[in-house]
Image 1 (tube, rainbow, N blue to C red):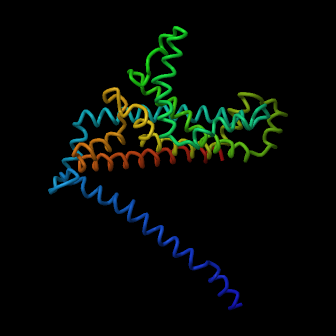
Image 2 (image 1 turned 90 degrees about the vertical axis):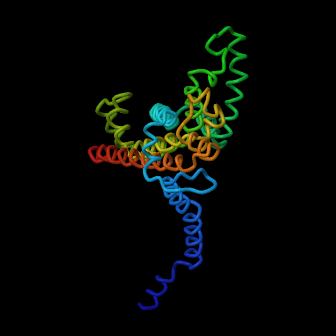
Image 3 (image 1 turned 180 degrees about the vertical axis):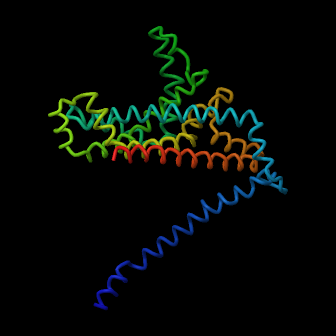
Length: 295
C-alpha cells in the first residue's frame, strides 16, 4: 500500500514542474511586471524618457477632459457593440447551415476558416488594397457611385473595418457554435418533431436555449477582443481619415510611444483594462443567469 501511494505521488515528472516554473517566470517578467510598471508610471508625468515626478490622479482626471480620448472611446464602444452583435448572428447562421446536410459543406468550411488562418493584420493589408484599388475600379466600370470611392477614406470607414473584421473573425465563433450544436442530444429534436416544432419555432425554443454556454463564451470573447481592436485599424486606416477610426488601443500606442505621453497613456491603458474586465464580468453574470434559468 505504501509503495503504491509513493508511486502515485511520484507520477508527475519533475520536468513538468520545471517547464511550468520557467513559463510562469517569463509570463511574470514580460507581462505582469510590465503591467505593474505601467500602473506605477500612470501616476507620474514620465514621457517615456528623462526624469519624472509624481502627479497623483492628474492623468486619470485628464482622460475625462481630453476630446481625443473621449472620441477614441466612443469609436471603440461603437465598433465593439456593432461587431459583437453581427459576428455572433452570422456565426450562428453559418454554424446551423454547416451542421445541416448541405452540398459543398467542406468547401464552405475552408472558405470561412481561411481568413482566421491568415491573421487580422495580413487580412487588413489585403483589404486595404481591395478597397483602395479594386472596388473603386469596379464601381466606375459599372457606374455604381457608392463603390466608386475608397470607403476607408470617407465618413463610413468604420463599416469597411467592420466588414473585414466580420470576415476574419467568424471562423472561431462558428467553431464554438458548431461544437455546441453537436453536443445537443438528437432525442430532443426527435421529440420536437413529434410535437410539431420545426423551423424558426424549433430554433427559438430548443436550439438557441441549449446553445447558451456557447453563446456566453462567444459574446464575452468577442466583446473583449473588439474593445481592444488594433491590428485591423493600423493595417487599413491608421486611425483615419483624420481621427475618425482611432480606437483607444491605437491612441495609446501612437501617443504613448510616439507622442511623449507615456504616463498619460499608461493611465488610459489601466482604464481600458478596468472597462474590459468590468464588461466581461457583467456579461458573464447576466448570461450565466440565463443559463441557470434554462437549466
